[in-house]
Image (tube, rainbow, N blue to C red; front, side, top):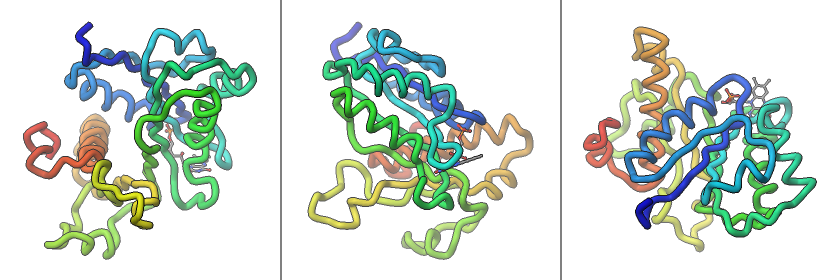
Length: 224
Ligand SMILES: Cc1cc2nc3c(=O)[nH]c(=O)nc-3n(C[C@H](O)[C@H](O)[C@H](O)COP(=O)(O)O)c2cc1C
């Protein structure tokens, strides 16, 4: 294992498969960046976390701000047993829908809090993905860029990229959001397979903007 290689366990919390799809799309990108990646939707104990330096939680929200049932045993065990995770680092990608208002991304937020209580060190801020509230882009999204964006865009990143954020800017205290436009994606793809592939590409494109890549960088990575 090279010194820069990190062993990452992607922990999936899902009811209907979106979080699994995000994990499956992320895996090859992280492998290409030189890391060792495992993905699990069944981890339930602290022992299941022991072999990896970094845990990346990709977690949806169900019910009213609830943790998906497949990852609930892990969250409950960590809460109850409070194992010492201070030797581990973690990140959270929370999937939700902003129309749920107060419980937006509640599942990811709860799992985030549990890892924090066990002493794990968080890498960056939680990424909150608002995945389903908008079938089509609104005027504000299109005119936020100069020149304005096409109404056919498949997704958008809202917020300030990591690395360009300032602690003194109140705007930067809002979590970043990635919005995927369901109807544009459905028009773009001819088959369900193409749709799934394009959702993955669009999500990674917007994650690229989150980490500060521009259109040219994304084009070079095949994520245009
Ligand atoms: C029954 C139900 C309840 C939901 N409750 C919430 C919620 O309280 N807060 C939220 O942000 N999203 C909520 N969502 C949206 C899901 O988190 C979102 O669609 C997510 O992409 C689903 O991911 P999954 O396919 O991995 O389960 C809910 C979705 C469903 C179907």
